[in-house]
Image (tube, rainbow, N blue to C red):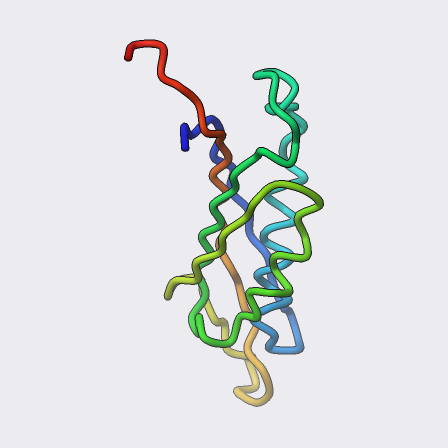
Length: 116
């Protein structure tokens, strides 16, 4: 894959303590930051788009990757969840923490290099 674009996002779950919700919101945040029509620019179909999704949260095993994949309307996405992000305890110390997920989307296509 030739990397053409990297976009970043951040998502939260403010009250529910839901790592998947935070991850999905982070992916949507990253997607909504760009409107570059890469497929058309390089003569590809949108379905040819390859998307690498890296998500950082404090409890990676709590992210439902299948729910994250549902965000993408086209392209072949792969999701990897890493330890990262941030959990913020409630001031009163009770209940679910506020969860922050960090997301990086790398988008590219199978392309031949011009320099051989």
